Length: 303
Image (cartoon, rainbow, N blue to C red; front, side):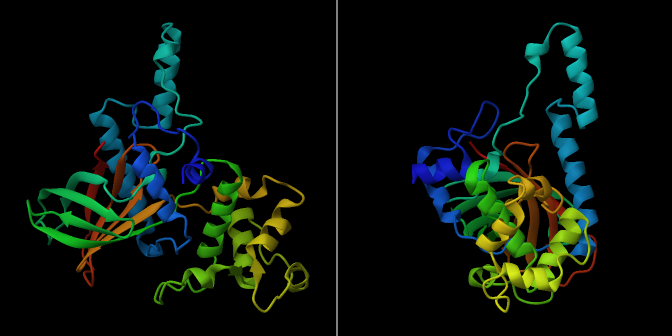
């Protein structure tokens, strides 16, 4: 299991200031190796979600006296270097994201929840105990734990061949036409092993900015069975033969961060594993069927 973890998530990838995970927890990450469907998010709510998460991140940084933006961080770095204090500048470049081993059994998260109806607009303490990558116990009422369903995107490996495989699996989910039908059921893993002609053209349009590509004839020639679609192996050959970094170069244009959704009855907590706030998950809180203003929540991994 350790070898699988090292390949998928990078070796000994946790550094000072980031949550540290025990070796037992590391072995548990193999439970996330299956490529289930990534979490969907209503496109009409996407912009509001991004604004809310950005505001939560700024508040998190402000509490810790960390520059609130990249520009502010660059200005602080320049200032410290000018004072001869360059060694005080923390450089997170090249470090694996903290959440590569989350959520798994045994982890605990603590934070706050506010919702116009659920909490009458007040902030209340929130805690999550993770029993497995798909189940946990949520407490937002001081001691009243309720079973919660956990839906989380599979992690994208930090480097190596596994990263490319993870990226391809993400593409095959996000450009699966059944996944893109937001009123329909999520596709099963076995339904995401092939990419349709329509899905491939949509990927090229969004990731590369080239519409109506490839032509049908070229697609058919690249597939062993065009009626099934393009397999993952065929997709990698098609995109990487001329440029081995093509998927990596274009991935950031279609990747929408790693998401997690906690569902307890009618309450849905829709969040992102923060790339910039180690241990933190920020997001919005919804009630099924309620068209009013959403609430918000934040959780932090206990280490």
